[in-house]
Length: 219
Image (cartoon, rainbow, N blue to C red; front, side, top):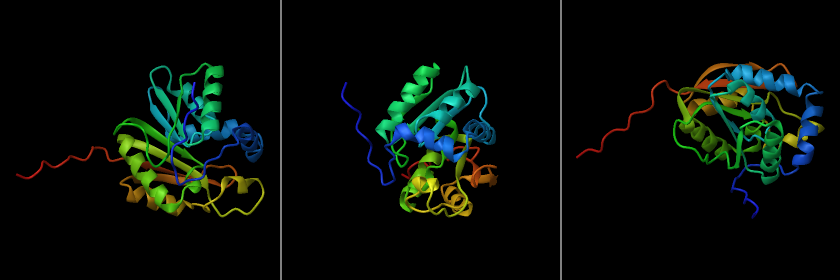
């Protein structure tokens, strides 16, 4: 089988998948499971929900989400890193869950319009430069169902050195920036605040309840 080709992206692509899970465990001081459940709760993920995890990494959050949406829901995860997706697929197989993982860039989601009830973006936006963030936000709006939700989680302030430096390249994205980003993409912010762990902040936004109606071409 030929290796999958990484998609083109302007964001940072993390390739050290084998160390990623260990770093996440150290970063959360062993409370990664609590963080996952908190994110799932904030996003309102429940039975029958269709979920997309953008920048899914090694798939830990997406795999956890499958247990909340089963048996009728679906969970997809995308990442631009081949090692991350390969590891996510192995973990899903080992856990015997139906999470679907594929290579894709956050700026160009490989899904039809109005596909998902919930989109997750966890510690991903700060890896994208401004223009790529804007494209990603527009793509999120496109793939959300009417009334669907996006939960964006990122660091609340500027970090300097240490383990947190591994997660940064283009600088921090504060909560106000995220709110403005999603608002410009046509979403309505309905909640925001602290996740309650390692200075993480969240923004929860909602897609319009009715899909935009295309105007007929004038004759």
